[in-house]
Length: 469
Image (tube, rainbow, N blue to C red):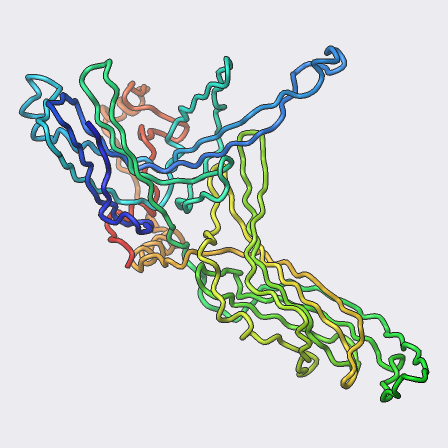
């Protein structure tokens, strides 16, 4: 007996509001008794860090062989997504066989059971309980309860930190067998997930920027040496007469600073002279690099991992910059046709993993006069924080619904006070009598509340929306 999962779109990448369809295929060689076949859609965010933990006593009181810290492995798991459906037995079959038995015998052969899930917008790990247990030698390790839950858009799949941090999404099938001594059969298959980006701000002419200044030092004339075999050189301008420039280097992005996966950077680099000098500016080095900061948390342990992607790297350029009103802009043709690598994931923040980005721009400049370039090379690094969006725009219907909700919240309806009528004696007596909440109607500080938290607004609206094109 074996079970496997076949997805109708096995090699694709899914996003919010997409439907995941497929079949759970059960192959058996003889009669097999089962109680149910369940298919689940799940997403996990797991971190594992190695740290130290004090013994809990004063170290001076310990024997010399016991002094030090105890090595400890902390593991934190959050269930970001959980949906389950029972594909066998069907409700009709359950109604027929409810009075006879809760188990069913399947004949030999191949049995297929279709399933269908819709991926929501936000995670729901705040409603899940961690059940992770690990055994190391003779020591039982139980995960600490964590109260840090973040209700946000589902994060993308993450597998670049093996053994330390992982976000994975998968479909799992379980065949429950009737006999308690027989093991249940399970199968699962992973899929890639890429979230819908949040709504973008309206286009504007503002720019976010990072700036560095540099003051060049005066150049020193090198004394000419005469020799029998030395040729006479042409006279060079006197370096002492050239005022060294004071420049500012700006990196500019649209405000807010957002870049898109698989698209070029909307970047501008400006060089501005801050003093009056006839010196010319020359670009020697240009290096643009996208740096990812992944913060991993496992209870009281934290670690930040760095990863980088080189967008552009050039040296020995020896390009004279064209000045216009003391402002020089680097040629955007150098990077405008270079998209971000396809391994760059969108920025996200979940319960135990956070991914943020910075853009590092390294500019190497020198100055000169005429055809002479002085040897000083000034390299300045500009660091700009930014966000990376997936490039999958939310559906217009969802944006319209969110705008209507915001407008309704800003303009609440006005209620005209009315004069209450004189209550009857029976109604007055009923109002004066104390009321006590029953066991099926819990009351909080602000009145009755439901047993389960309601879905988020995005998920409630998304129930009526189709997949993104």
